[in-house]
Length: 149
Length: 430
Ligand SMILES: Cc1ncc(COP(=O)(O)O)c(C=O)c1O
Image (cartoon, rainbow over the protein chains, first blue to last red):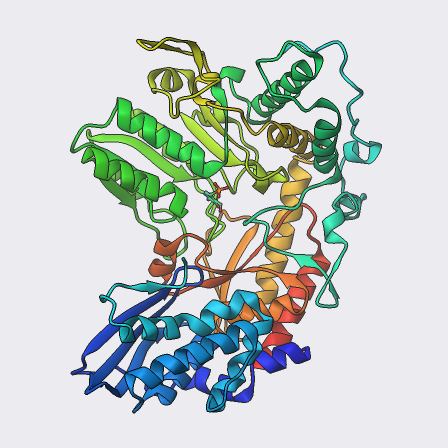
């Protein structure tokens, strides 16, 4: 298998894809957000507990490909404990990373997802949960998110 | 048949090889494959193996040349110019209609309506049924095996007319539950809409039987033939279906063109689908007199080149459309399924006795979408997803499947490459 594939499916991604972290329901919580990718059938539910402008806790349930599961899992780890403002900044940085490959400092392990850039058909897999997160944090109403615009 | 204009530039004749009869001695696929230029390329450094034929088929030289010839020599608008080019364009398009009529054995060319594809054909019929037949409480019968394009138009129509959608269930084998079907029919049933071959499972439905049962109750039947025309003989008079729809691009023709066959009694009864040029005979501000069939349903400038291309595709395909082709595809499907079963963790979704050209499967521990990417890097094109048949996925309790689908140009070697690609992918995934 070629190097691009190895870059896409790095060990860390495979690990999170197989054993996603924070993979459970959160109750009670302040926000629940559905996220669907109708193209491939990925369906995620994101749970957030936001108090005093801080994401106190975050978890998710659902099913999807390794990329979407890993991206969501790593997102929950990166976001937990962050202020809403800092989380939104990270969303923008992550988006930038996936779309243009440009990485900012303090992205930490999320960098491993940058391999997705070489696979345009898979970008939606990596960004699905992040769009759902952004939707919640920007305080839109609780409509379902899809990556099909 | 339409009359041929005098100055018709010489049309591309089918090459000798196209009329070669396939036999056990003759290698069909070698002869066919060299007529498909697109197949001879590398993808990610590997020779392309194209197994996404249920999504769309590739186009043979005969079709590419027909499109090229049309635009180079004959292009004009149809049915309205008195000049030579318009006459030729009209002739080319109307001959394509004749080819289609023969291909599906329609009783008359008036029953062959050009549409954009299966989806538009179904929407046209749904519109006609809603406008001229449906009353609140009436019922439309579809199946749980349908493509979204044979579900959503009916849902919309039901919402608008307060009709009710009834769904024939699937059995775990991937076949339709015909007993449940008979129970479902009632005196309020107004139409049965059913796929000839399932795009997600490959099941060949017993449409002749389904039609005859419906007709016993006086109910008309629409057959979605999108997956069928390239893989099984279609004779609309023998089937006695009231409507038959298919897309050109799934039978080696261009995108943007398809066919609605409808029995004249129904098409006469339906109001026009769209208003505009071409579909009228006379317009004043008080009154519009509609054109005759099939033009009543062909408002606006049609997809002329695509219609010509579809005619060329069906003519080309007619040379091969015989028992040995169905056998070739059946053999490949058999080989594919037998070899898939030797791989651990593989589950084939849909095991109908009558099945063709489509094989959906899952591999334990690897999401279909990831598998699609891995196979792509082996040069193998398959489809990963729900195949626009979410109710089917729900029934089998899978979010998605990988689907390998066959066409005339696939070979035993393609199957071997897929199996090897799967083995490599599974190893990579360890
Ligand atoms: C069974 C079936 N019906 C309908 C369609 C829709 O065809 P089109 O998108 O060409 O209108 C398809 C194509 O995917 C199909 O497989």
